[in-house]
Image (cartoon, rainbow, N blue to C red; front, side):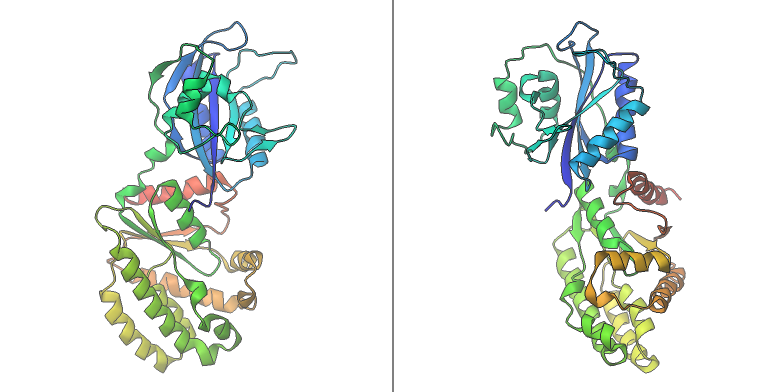
Length: 378
């Protein structure tokens, strides 16, 4: 199930270099506002509601965790940066760029600043035809009709001509060159959030760790000495079982898989939490299991400094994590970094995301995607 919001935008331009205006708007939206996952072809359409040059129009899909009002505010700011000037005159006018929010999921929003679905979308072929290109399973929440039906029923008979195809920015970031990516990090580093977002944006198969199901975890945070060994053995058994089950459903040579953990995290935590004699016994079991576990094509380690980890842990509010000491997190970070250095047969990318917020800052998310894509070229 997609945890992000699906937003459809309509873009138009009838001043200057229309194609460049549209392409710059798409790239800027993707870089600064939200992930552009689909783009329609560009259509040339007559000016609607006034006398003016023909427009270039397209539609696109954003995926985002942001609320509708925030998306609108950021789009209005972007329009100004791209040269949009709103003249204090009534009616429609020519413009360098026009970006309209047409839908937000299948929600109905009626405020002074934002109305979705756009109240006039069903009457405008320059909106409907590019939207139809997107091949979405979207139904108008008021009219209860799908896009092909809306196009057919529209009273607008304007001539809309396809000028050229466009490529969504996401399609230029080739993560599918890796069949299997494992994203790791310390407690609170954001590995699950990032894994889920990448899987949704790239339509990948998602494997998430079932950490919340471990009965020893709350007990461990209360009495580490007593519960460390059963906790780590339980985690090891569960991770192996889950990876075996989940990965067996996919074709490691054809499917694109993103996981928020890899089996060797078990060894990292065990080395920190277990006494020396317990760790020796544990490692014997781990080595046997590790040999049987599929290895990712790329292993991404999200490094965050201890201060940021503690802030993230506090923010997500899991009661049993609140007492985790800074020293423990530092040992885990150090354990990861030391172990990664020894992995000569593992394709590793270490990313310092201490000053990154890939949920709220689109540029930070694109930075991470670019680094992952660049890794194959290094």
